[in-house]
Image 1 (tube, rainbow, N blue to C red):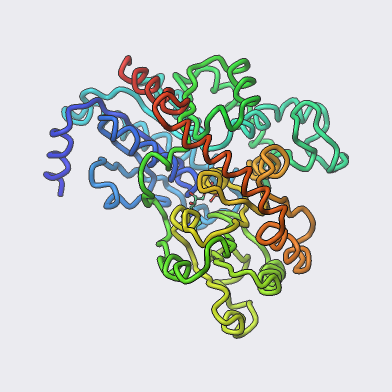
Image 2 (cartoon, helix red, strand yellow; image 1 turned 180 degrees about the vertical axis):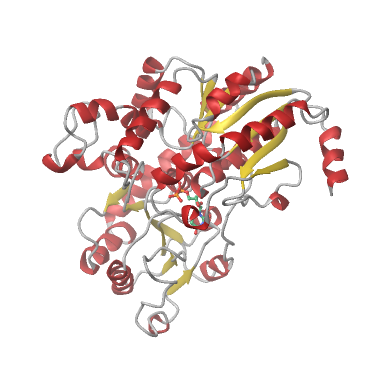
Length: 458
Ligand code: UDP
C-alpha cells in the first residue's frame, strides 16, 4: 500500500498542492471537489484531515492522505454547538497540523515542488503556521459572497444594535445590508457568543492578508456582492464555482448514500417529486417531524425525504412517525437516511427541493434548475434563503411556524401552481448562466486559469 502510494507520488511530476478541509460535510465536499479540479489540471494533491469525521481515502486513490490526531474526546466530538466545536478544533489541531506539515515539506518526494497550502477559511490558526513555514496560504470559502459580507459586517451590526436581535422588528430591513431583513442576519446558536465575535473579527481581518481566496460561486450570480467584495478586500479572488459541475458526481459523503433513492425516482413521472433534505447538521424536534410528514402526505405530491439519523433531536430515526405512515401512502413517499443528492437533483422526476439552504444544496439546486422551498435554520442559510426567494425569485420561503396546512399549501404552490412554473423558468435561466460561466470564455473558466497561473507563480 505504502509502495503504491509512493509510486503515484513519484509518477506525477506536477507541482503539489496541500489541502486541509474543515471536517464537516458541507466543507469537505467543496474542498475535495476543488482537489479534483486541481488534479485534473495537472497538480499533485495531498490532503491533511482530522481523525474526527475522517475521510475515506479509497474514493480518491490518486491523492495522498495524511490523518492528524485532533484530540477531541467523544463528548467534544458530538458537540451540537458548531462555534464551540470549530474553535476547539482550532486549538487542538495546532501542534499536530504543524508537525504533519513540517514532515511533509521535508519529505524528499512529497515535499519537493509544494506550491501552496489551501485551507478552509474556518481553519484560522493555519495562517500563522503558513507564515512560519513560509508557505503561501490560499483560502477556500465554502459559502456565498453575500453571506461573507453579512458576516464581515457583524461588528457594525452589533454596534448598531441588530445583534442580538431581540429588540428589533424581525421584518425590518437592514439598510446596511440590502436585501437582508433583521431576521435574515446569520444566527449562530452558541453558548460562547464572545468567542464567536472574536473569531469573526479574526477571520475578517485575515481575509486581507491571505495569498488569495477561492470561491464556490460566480459573479453573474452575486454581482453586487462581488463588486463590494473586490472593493473591501483587495486580495486575489478566484470565483471558480460551481465546483461540482466540473466532473460527474463524486462522493465524499461521511454517511453512505442510499441508491434506492434513484431506483424509486425511476418509477415516478417527470417533475412530479419533491425532494426534502435539511443537510448534515440542522436538527428539528419530534412535533416538527410530524408536521412535515402530514404536510407531505396531505399535499398528495410524491416525495423523497432524507431523514438523517440525528435529524430529530432525541430520536434514533423515524420511530416517532405514526405506525404504517409510508405504507398508507401507497408508494407515494420514500424515506432514506442519506441520498446521493447531486444525482437526485439531476433526476428528471424531481420537480422541487425543500431545503435548509446550505450553500452546497442551494448551488446544486440552481445547477439542475430545481425550484426551492426554503427553510433556513442557522448561519449562512438565512442569507441564502433570502437570495433564493427575494433576489433570484426561484423559491418560496417557509417563514412561519412549521404547520401541516402551511406546508401542504407551499408544496402545491411550488409543484403544481403557475407560480412554481414561473420560478422554474427563472431558475432555468440561472442554470444557463452556470453553463456559460464554466465554458471557455466564461468567468469561472477564466478565473480557474488565473488560479492555476497564480499557483504556478509561487
Ligand atoms: N448531501 C448528500 N446527501 C444527502 C444530503 C446532503 O449527499 O442526503 C450533500 C449535499 O449534496 C451537499 C452537502 O451534503 O453537498 C450538504 O452541504 P450544505 O452546504 O448544503 O449543507 P450542510 O450540511 O453544510 O448544512
